[in-house]
Length: 230
Length: 410
Image (cartoon, rainbow over all chains, first blue to last red; front, side, top):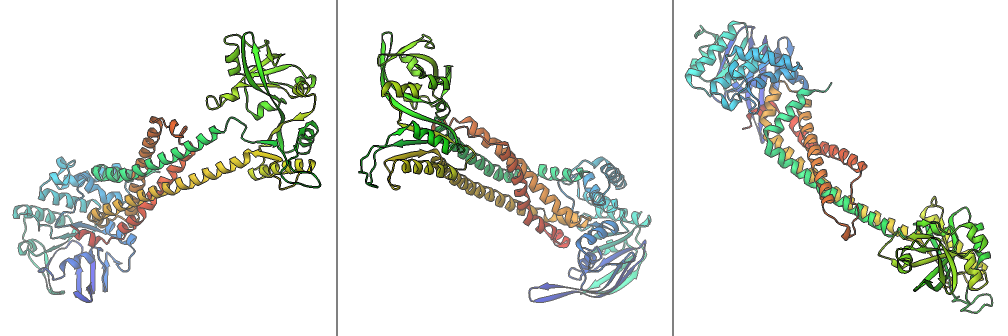
């Protein structure tokens, strides 16, 4: 599903440059649920952004679903993001003047689906996250957990091959966090490949594999016994 | 097929940000309103000028004679130049291609009496063409015609104020008017278009030129030659026609070429040229001010659009993460700008037009300060163009935002 080889990434900070990722090798197979762990500054978010084609790598190789991701035009990158990837962010990143249904339907709009199809599909995914009754509500009328569920529904709407979650529970209390994680486990059970960036130990234990990053290198990569919530 | 989804996106974004939309719209509406008012006022000025000179045909040339001021070929200065029928016929023949209408004029002051009413008037003895040169409008009856000239008839045409002075409510057509003890039959009454400003014109009595020559001197003298040039001539051609006629007359009478007083002319082409020049200066001025206001409007909306892009950075980032190509981001910004510019521009156009209509500006030299259809079409095109220009910088900026940077934006 995902193959990363000798990945390097550095950021220019004025005159000096900051070497964030120093030779990452990572393989993720279909149906895995991987937690990427690390303290802040370890490079875990940068890695996720590169995997998500939101950022470009400096050197190394990155293959996603058999396609090499390299020197893409903005247009091509947008196409791949739309087709392969679903994003869930810590701060939800819903568009605040669109209601839940419209937010979920947005990636489908960029897929070029007709309005009616978009709405049907969006409604289906909202139902899946249990928010049918909240379809017409704006994000600021929803609770944090509901917002994140809308975001997950939006990430799933385009039926991506890989779901990327950047600290999905970072802004939620532990009860809601468990609720979201339970839902992600359920999705994984259905076969979806999921990558979760987190710095919370208990969240990582709910995944099937933990990749620990420190100072831009992989410290540890091990499969674990999943802490099932279902 | 039109992408309705795109328009829905734009409406939604405009609708959810009413104040912002209103503010950016206001800038453009105000600029267009100013532009419309300015343009209307300039149009009004031009209309006033065109009306002001409508008393005569606007392609007339008047030629007068005087006394010589330069000695030439043995002739003394102070010699009186007298136009006559042969000269008139010669000019009429020689310049026939360039002349539209032509008439001679003989002046005479008379005491006119009808019944007990009596007053002094000036008589203009003319050819039938005179009606079209002076733009006399017939109220009743007819003007002097060719038969009157041929038969030296004692028929006259009088102004509407002569009727008021002498006849009161009596219909003057067919009545006889006593001019210096000679009876003339009234065959027509005319009205002058420039009423009020020049009441003397409406107190003129017209008589066949041949009759006047016979009765008042038994000669073939003419005091003045009036003509209108072929309207197809350009102003420059008309000016040179006037000069050629004057030169021809000077040649016939042995007048020095540089003698300014023996033969003089008044050429409307010259005045027209001045008016045209004035109008074009005015038009350029309005254009500069108009374009200035428009540019200010465009810069204003561009500014606001840049702010909008800044404000929507995160939203743009989200859209990009969800798979929006740069072209779609650009299109949203451009269409939003064009939409706001076009709609608010039209509002400005309407308000400006309404202001021009509400206030009566005729006292200030501004007549019918309307805005034409072609201007409205031109304005529409300009507005769309302005919207595009205003969106250019912000749209490019929006499209080049990196999703990762945009998502970090708080």
